[in-house]
Length: 246
Image 1 (cartoon, helix red, strand yellow):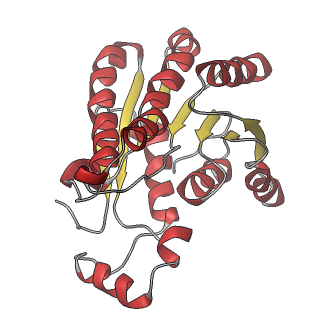
Image 2 (cartoon, rainbow, N blue to C red):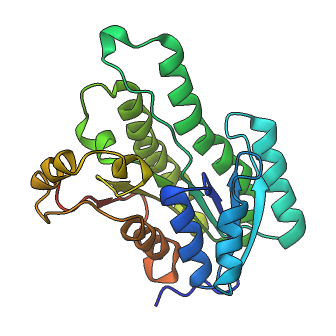
């Protein structure tokens, strides 16, 4: 199930956390992964994939720079002749209560979390339209669905990905290109591991399944949506949150 042999996949924000696991799992299913991140930060991801026998290459990418995105996608097409899967994953937080939030904190989060999904998706459209096939998957958040105090900028960016994806799904459905969203809940990452055990237990108590999710939980959802088995699914939000938001 969920074989991706022969597919070329681009994953942004692939240096750590969810992005790194998504890149590794796509490669484990047979995809040739272009792991994109700032500078040479994706090199460890590629080394991990190669060590497991997968196919991958690192790409330097500054997601807030349109020229950088266009050059990365153009290079991938020149080398491989196609792009089958795009995973818009890059993201940051700049949390603060609204009364204290600086305009630059708002602008930076929107410029990193939302706008690159537009630029990356636009860049892959020509090859996908030519192929008459493709998968565009964006990583949103439970915060984009339910909101969270102190995260108006982050919530706006993640909710924006949902609206963007639904609109684009309608534009591309006739060309056999699907556009979907994965919305993780509380996931075990370097950031959450730094939180005290007591705080993590408090979070887990809010989740019906009783635990934080793993990056592999999220990556499995991405692999499903990227696969042929999900060919009749588009414009949807797949929530990977343990029942935290229903």
